[in-house]
Length: 421
Image (cartoon, rainbow, N blue to C red):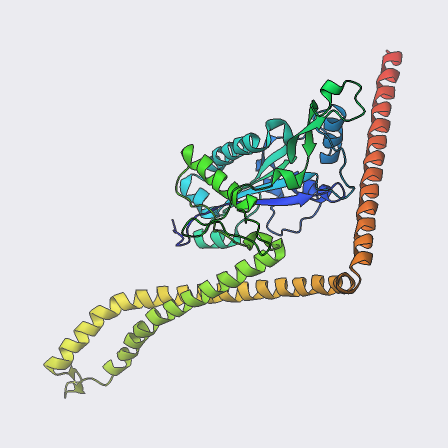
């Protein structure tokens, strides 16, 4: 099996979602879409996805509202556009799983990663956790000559902190004034991810901001450390902690695929060059065969007479030719194969560039509006989100009505058959 020179690294990314945009993540994570932005999703593989925890409500938002009703969480004092959900995406290089047992190993790995998330955020605050096993890794598939899938975990959690509610001046009992009235589980992204670990220089001195206040380690970076330590302590070895300050996770699916195809294209070009270097000397050996025709002279009997030196050279070339002929054929086939792969990748890259440019052109008016009239663009975005939310609610209502009507028809048919008997 091919072994990549690239180190296998873990990665934990955090995404923020509000009430108006969490449905997009839900459709992707729970595979509710009809089509996917990520072109590597193989729909026939969706049944292989593994839910370590499924939502108990039809949607993420409905589950949050139910939890609020049951007193499990509080949304008190939050703005309309507040962050209500955090999506934790845990990922390791594809080849790490391929070298350690593939699908079955990935299930064990991400089940343990799911338990890490439960400990970090609280089991009740994990809405959903699903391992995707339906996204094909095109580069690895081509390299290994078999289908290879990229396994990763999507977990939707609530950023909950414990908040003490104190008795206010309205309390009639002065002894209770200022004491803890109740402790609520408040949703607060900013407080959940507030870091209290200061940054220091090589000498251990605190690093300060321009205003003189200390700088703290990014909470997302701390999450990377915690994940790596948790997994290695439980026996999962052979990978490194993700790179510090990496911005790879901020690429869109399309941008990431274009970047990956460019890298694959460069690798193919280098491999073609290597094959060409091996091919040229072998081809030169084949040219020597033409020189054989000029060896020797005809005798009176019509036979060929050659010198001892020419005879030695001829036999050596004949022996070398037996092996060279096969090698030349293999190298020609190999060069043709990589040349075709190069053209295929170049064409695929051009198609992706075209699609990317088309998307960019469609978005140009909005991007210009965002640059010159940000407030108007924000209002427009919020309005579109509201319309989508309304559309989804309407579709859900219509679906429920159709299902109810279907059940009533079934019930009516059963009653009719009962009466006929």
